[in-house]
Structures are given as structure tokens and as C-alpha cells.
Length: 245
Image (tube, rainbow, N blue to C red; front, side, top):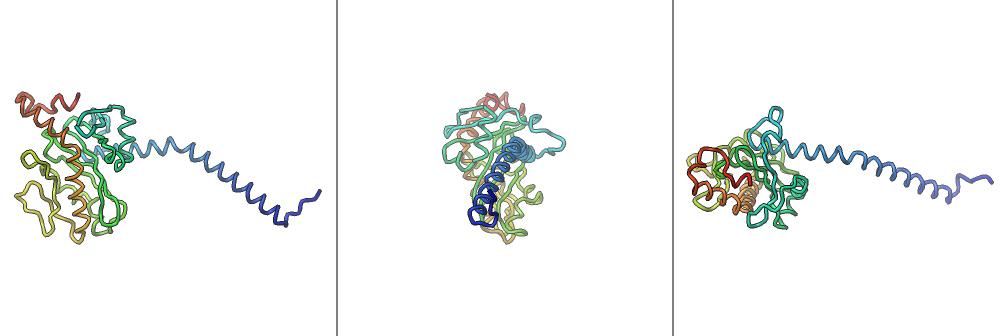
């Protein structure tokens, strides 16, 4: 029997078959590329962590400088040292924070704290690295999804991120973070850096993000500081035992 290729029935069946074939091919392609995509995402995050510590990822590998990746609870206790679980929490940092789960990366010279917050037009995020005193900033990496080019987007530049190095996040026993000061930071203030010119809302968002996220980790950070203060032999010798438990 001759098929009428001009009939509505034929056109509908043909279209449905083609859609199904294309969908199957796309699904197979997605499955085949998933492992590579996951690996690229992991490498990108590890690179940012290394950068936050002030190292060049072309010269220093993640595994050379990170001694442990842990997941903390709200009390600062380590609940998991499974790398896959830690990075799974990192991939949904907003949800992890809401669930009371806090990924942390222990380095040979301090720790790296992931951060997530809100800028002017959308999410902002990054990593802040603290020295072994859990107070002095070794470096920071900041990123965004939609801040204004030339204004708020300047938080991603090395020129801006260098301003944080050497600043401190504790004032006594309280975490005050780092404030991006409009009109210019007071150079004698260890908790201030210059705000982004014309990017007040983004700057305020970064300030709030740093303080809020560091306070999530305060139980852990303060416990390490107290342990070091109680054991003078630890001073000047790198990480305390608490870091590597």
C-alpha cells in the first residue's frame, strides 16, 4: 500500500518519531559526557581553592596543598571526611548551609572556607583562605553570576582580591569579617578594604557574605584558636592537631 507522505497522519507520526530519536541521541550524548563534565566542575573548584590560598594552580596541585576535605555540622564537629560528599555539599552550597552542613578544606597552611551570598543582580560566591591562626586572610577568590561589568563585577579582579591579604576577621572573640568600605578603607583598620567604585550594592553583598559565612564556621575556627592558645608549643609550628583530626 502506498503511503501518502502528504497526509496529516504521516506528518504527525514522522515528527513524533524524529523527536524521539533526537531525544534518545541527546540523552545518550549527555550520559556519555557526564563524567567529563563532572571532572571539569571538580577541577574548576579545586583550582579556585588553590588560588584562594595564594598559590598558582599551574605550579601547585590541589592534592599538594590540601591535606583534608571535611564536612562540619553547626557545632563545628566533623561529620564526614568523604571527599565526594564534601564536594557534593559544595556543589549546592546554599542548600548545604540551609541544612547545617559546612564543607571546609584543610590546607598545609590554614583552611579554606567556601562562601555564598547575594550581590546586586544575583548570587555571589567564593572562597576565603585563613592562615593557621584562623584569623589572618591568606587570600580570597570571588565570583558572581550577573554583576555589572566595570562596576560590581570588579570583585573578580586580582587588583581587588589582593586587598584582602593580611586583613583579619576576628575582633576579640567575635568574627567581624571584612567590610568593603565606601569612600575608601581606613588603612589602620585590619577589617576594612576599599569598596568597588560604583558597586555599592555588590560591595555590601560581599561584606555581608564574608561575615555571615565565616560565622557558620565560627565553632570550628574558635576551637582551633583556643586549642592553639592553650598549647604554646603549637605556636609557630603550623597547624594544630585539631586541623588534622
